[in-house]
Image (cartoon, rainbow, N blue to C red; front, side):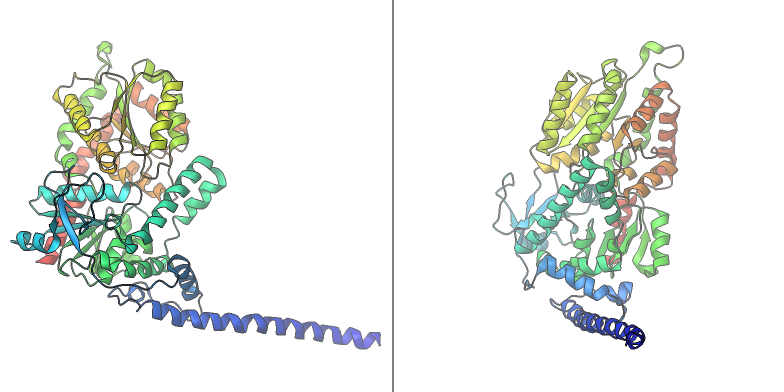
Length: 543
């Protein structure tokens, strides 16, 4: 009997294993087959002109791509029924940027917006000759995408084009609400990861470099639901987008003249859009996307996204910084000029711990008159409170500027004479509105010796940069770009690393002089002309 059991047991075990495998495999294959069919249905509901699978390649039949994409799409949108009815729009004059037009839903006025507005149809009738207005379309997610949009706006207007700023989140609608949850989640996750550090920061950083083809497929399915936010425009309108989801929505709706500004310096499928000119800031991204298989005619090397005013004044501003940096060294030590360091907080407000630690670390330099600080807390009330708390703790005396008029007056005072200095060693910029918070950093860069920021969109700015701790692994590649061009430091991961660079700036003028000279050379070959190239490109497409 024992011999029979011994010989039959392996057979029984194998039968059980095979049965379990079949019981698992068959339902999974059925689910996978359903997902492939559901994915095809979702790609056509609503109707879209954006064929992502032709761009990245269709999901392989034996892969789980379709299942993953469908699962995420269902979690984000559920069974939402899409609309293809255009949302009526109207244009009003920007209260912050003279000559710029901003869109909103017809009849919907938010607090702070002017009452007077004009229907989009009437606006286009008046402003479509000799060419249609340029639309700069974006989505507020942090400050970065808006900062790129305003840089683009500055060039479009400066080159004589009627320009419209179109933030998809500014159009009151169910479609805009789809995006708000994502924005809130990103901001909270960034702040939490930055404060906690360690494994939490590592996990978020890894997530932000996972923008593969499936991530692009998910974004495309969401963007197809956003078409009503753009459908009021004529389909041949020239559009420059500073967020890839805005570009995806434009292509889905059938727009034919779209330039998509690709952010960062790390190539991910998620950042590109078919049937557009995907414009890169540097050659690494340009070459990498070509290797990934994007068509040559859909990839363009443009240059860095920088505001026109900063670029136009590079030679003059850099020479002034070189002069300041050299004062007080050698025989004329009494003429030493303190290092002006501009520290902005990103749109997600994710750097409170690092910046607070830095302020404590350089307390002695500020009180000894070796460093002046321009702190831009933006419109984040928690950051404004945090700044005021640490400044009070360290017994710092400081001024507060809380209006865009005040910011401009402050800048002009410093530009008027190299002997003009701020009234106090620390100036805190704090606002209740969003646009002044974004614009202040651009305005104050011109009168700062160093921009101390995380390596985000500002890593590409034409100003000497101290690269602080990144938020997301993708930002490491932007810091590398800045350091290799010579206009920025390598990433200062810890507060002590940042202090070493600041001491270096104070001990000798050499590093700051070298950075400014590199900026002048870079500008001579058009490295900072990315937004200018984008405007030229979209007008070329339109013609």
